[in-house]
Image 1 (cartoon, rainbow, N blue to C red):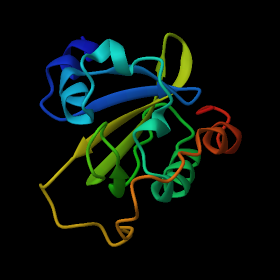
Image 2 (image 1 turned 180 degrees about the vertical axis):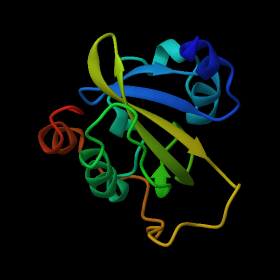
Image 3 (image 1 turned 60 degrees about the vertical axis):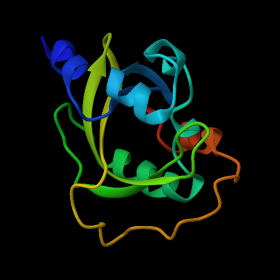
Image 4 (image 1 turned 90 degrees about the horizontal axis):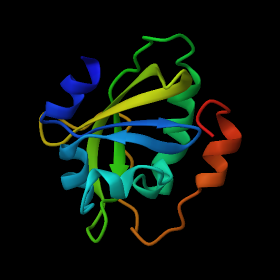
Length: 141
């Protein structure tokens, strides 16, 4: 039932475990510029997150210890494929996916004013630090 709700949600949603995307809904695939959901599954989450947003993301995930814990909304710079970075508000939820620790991320664009901690828009060509995410938060990577 929960997966079906995510499948039909109009906001981009993805679930990641051990630093890799294990689920994405169709809205996430469209928004991230993927040809399909299958193209996203198995890829490192940070492939779609700008390096300047990764430290805040890691810290936010570290605070989510119990299933059902929800983060405050935070500004995240997302890098869709073949597009410039996009500022999004993200909320993370601690969950499980196939009996493994995981995090559900919901992205919202253009609905609210930018968050106080909104980073400056950096160049989109920087290297994505996926190894740093895996080391910093064991349940993520």
